[in-house]
Length: 258
Image 1 (cartoon, rainbow, N blue to C red):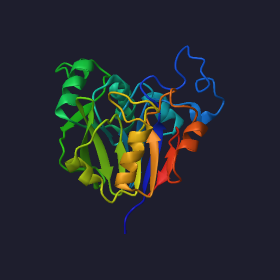
Image 2 (tube, rainbow, N blue to C red; image 1 turned 30 degrees about the vertical axis):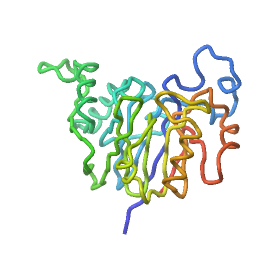
Image 3 (cartoon, helix red, strand yellow; image 1 turned 45 degrees about the vertical axis):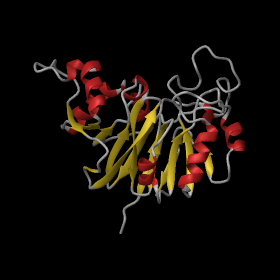
Image 4 (tube, one colour; image 1 turned 60 degrees about the vertical axis):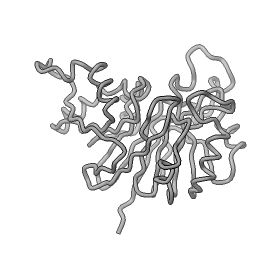
């Protein structure tokens, strides 16, 4: 019997978040709570364990908002600041759970973490710094604590390789512009897909709505959700009006159970 997998969207916004600082557009001034988008991240809950994909600058608030009491591991998609800069706050879980935080990332992300959080990896650590146990991953499957199988999928963020992740019948893709035929094969049979869709206009390193919908049509999941949404895209309701019946704009706090 398969255990239920719960996905919580911690943040559905792009690198600036929504609202954008000092912007008075209709999206940034919207009163709809679904138009308040923190930086992109999800929480995966399975078999009494919690896992996070990406720790952006809003990580601390996202953990508080969702009342996350335990966190077993962090998976990183890539090394941009809006996806890694909140890593320092895992030390709260180090203290409470009395264990190192398991971190899964590519070799290039590991290089960035060692650079940006050099104090974490010093031989003579300052008291209270985060305790991290790094696991270098590539495109091969790996197993998270709690026996959760993960299939990384390489997507391209312009010229930067980014790891998307498939877990059972769920897949999460962020910061993608292109995906090779070989990597798309790993998405076959996915029932729920979360994929980035930055805006209506084409962008050099992100899917726009047309490109995201084309991928969704090709993969043919039962449901798909759009994430990494810019204030240039429109309000939540505007985006929903542009989507086919099985596609929805994600929003912060959205929970999906598979």
